[in-house]
Length: 127
Image (tube, rainbow, N blue to C red; front, side, top):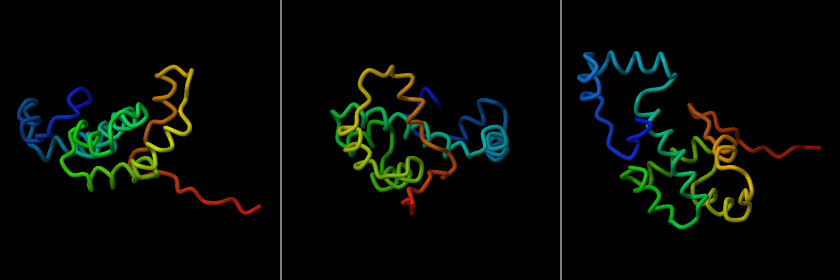
């Protein structure tokens, strides 16, 4: 899934390839990774989308389809859940506040999305 994130997820075929039922594979996967196979795949897609949006040469719609999503609405919703802001805002923010000079590995680590819908809400500090 990490390498083939842009392809559709076929849990049945994946389960057959390892000799399990789809239900058993999903349960074991969730036990090991803390989320369902589909949720894990969407996290990988959002990570790649973040990279493409920071690059700045593709529209949000193009990025959505490039990472294997077929619905812009679903992509935007999941992106917002994981990153804490819509992809269009993230793209503008990346354009405004790029991270020049930082190695790509550092940028990827700092900007990695938070899994399991744990994006922190930005609340204003009351001094």
